[in-house]
Amino acid sequence: MRNRKAAFSAENYDKDILSTIPYYDEVYNQIADVVSVAFLNKAVSWLDIGCGTGKMAKVAFEQCNVEKMICTDNSFAMLEVARQKIGFSSVEFLNLPIEEINYDSQFDVITSILVNHYMTYEERMIAVRNCYHALKEKGTFITFENFAPCDEAMKNLYLKRWKKYQYRKRKSIKECEKHLSRYNTEYFPITIQEQIRILKDCGFMSVEIFWCSYMQVGILARK
Image 1 (cartoon, one colour):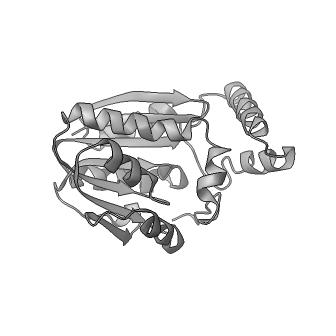
Image 2 (image 1 turned 30 degrees about the horizontal axis):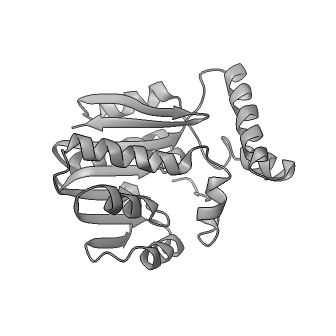
Image 3 (image 1 turned 30 degrees about the vertical axis):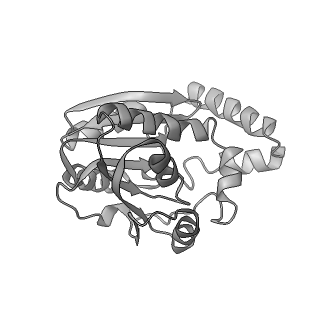
């Protein structure tokens, strides 16, 4: 297993991520919209993997009909911030990495946001299979990840555009370059096509892109 080095501290995550990931807030709104439409606003059981500071739980309870939610993360510090932010009694917080998820047909919805790009190919397969098994029949898996462009020229173009975005958000040039230097050194993105193939190989029946911007992609899969 690779040593996963988070980009930001738990204390500064909510602030720093907004100046790093374009449309970060809107992604959560889009996920909530997909869930509310897919389940016609019926009460759902939800597993959020790599929950970070609890943003998905906050948006889910504001915009969807959530019966119960389990939020997992491999960082005690992130979970502590999430516990302080989320005051709903129907949310359970667990210190648990995605490779150790072990549920069987218990959830209507599973979300995994900016988690799998830290993994090797083999770890991704384990993680996605765990999510597949944890979903109920016709359940929905939503993943949002950094992705790798298909060739070097496109990669360079996308990285320059991402650097421009971060600079507009008042990061210094040094801060922008430091973050982009994490590509393939501290996180390990794969192409969108490879992400879709893994989901299908793990058994998901329908797989579609529902969001793509800069170097991030949102993929929706149905069991």
